[in-house]
Amino acid sequence: MRGARPLILLAILFILVGVGTTWYARFKAQATTAPAKPKALPPGTSAAAQGWTYTKMAKDKPVVSVFAKEFEEVEGKYRLKGIELHLFQKGGPEYDLVKSASAEFDIKEGIRRRDHHGSPSERAALGPINADPLFGRAF
Image (spheres, rainbow, N blue to C red):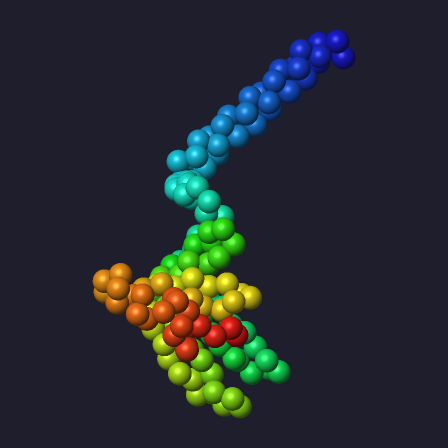
């Protein structure tokens, strides 16, 4: 039995070397196939996404659906780009479609349009950015 001690130690050593080699090979393979790290968010931005959707329901019927190609949450407000707004009619599946290049969305306040074009005097004549009846209403 005394002669078996070195063989048992040698067997344990071979097992440990085999497990370590296998682990290292898998570790290297996993490191090379890992996805790239995402770019850091700008300061003040807490979230960003592509293909954002929001739907508000009332009694199992949609009231409004907002679809945006790009989304950022900055200082508690959602900045949206490439927007489609579906304003549903009462009691039916029909809706008014509104498209906009960009807007701000706050769940409490609704949507505020940000893409007024023209000179500063023309924008001032339009009034506040949420004066548009479709974009200024809370849902």
